[in-house]
Image (tube, rainbow, N blue to C red; front, side, top):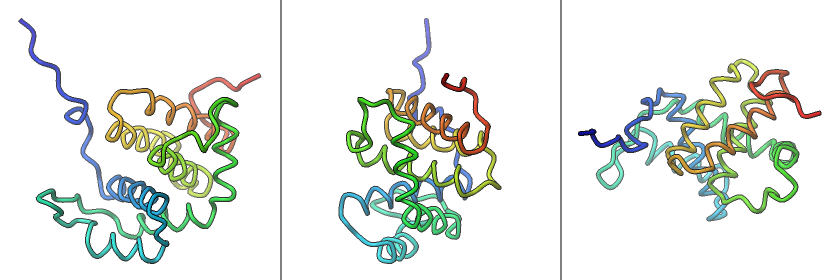
Length: 167
């Protein structure tokens, strides 16, 4: 007799404060994209009501607020650089506009860290955003797409990555 397998959520590593900040930044980027809220308003809302707070009975993990702000503002300030980088890493039949808002937010945050935060090792950035993708999508195709795109970006930006360079 086999034991039931764990759900994908049960297989995740617990997030540290930076990991929680990354997740919150992705959620905030999603909110900004969908609701059209601004950077200052969204940052203030998350810091006052979400980071480390209880919402509808769920306790949000304590997050590194400075890291959260850095990712959020970094993505917004560099979006005209980040979006073309993502586009170059997608296949021609998958334009950035075809990706849902959550996936765009994950990729934008990951590309920001890879391009502007050389103090964070590539494997950390890639694995953190794959974990975030798994939290939203489970074991579907999206985490694999996040892995592929961030790996391509890492190879181009930092000369690091696991995949082979396209010839």
